[in-house]
Length: 285
Ligand code: SIN
Image 1 (cartoon, rainbow, N blue to C red):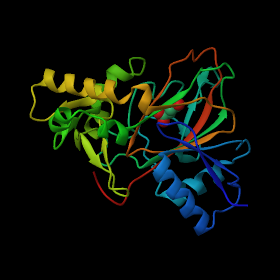
Image 2: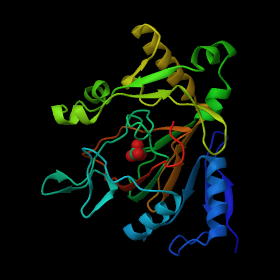
Image 3: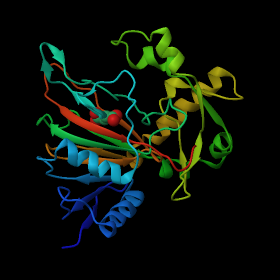
Image 4: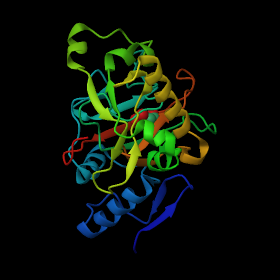
């Protein structure tokens, strides 16, 4: 049986039906999947209740090299490639990051070469509707819909990104960065508009706006521009909201999407997920 790719929303996203991810993917099937992913930006797989860590890693590795340097994040014992997002507790401590990514961001935007993709497997999710959803914005569509004048303001502009600046804003509950961590997070520079290395399409690339300073603009003007672009990009017409079911897995293209987990009560709801982060070895931004 061939696989079926069913679009999920006008903004982005497609569900993959009829694919057995418990077996190694042959090259033809993998190419079909990869093409669907480049087109839909986010692929949704359902009912992967029994997907093992090894299977999760194997599928992720078909797409690329995995990140094993998830600084200051909670990873699975013996598996530095698996980021644990979890409200479950062991000995009174969360076993993973309970509320990661609850702001609009691009994974590893504060690195010189941000991630290519994320592959997130939901092992346990709240059954209450709308609790713990994840939102994805289509940054090609957002860029293409910008007014001509705004395109002129952003084309060719560079964003100076400081993890040190955004850390206390995004993680008020986490300890401040140590000097060693600050030194490891040197500022990086990204274009505000990025050309996707595989599709050749242009996408807005703004990351976490609290970390950015637009080069060549007064700071307040640059901050206002970043916020304006974020508000523009997260309009419902560009956004797909994923309501998780247990066993779902999502693969997103981090080079042309923007995503955010929705805040929820971490002490009330059980949400347990594993994420791999797939790196982009082909073309630096
Ligand atoms: C992430 O930002 O990678 C995690 C999103 C989520 O927890 O829904």
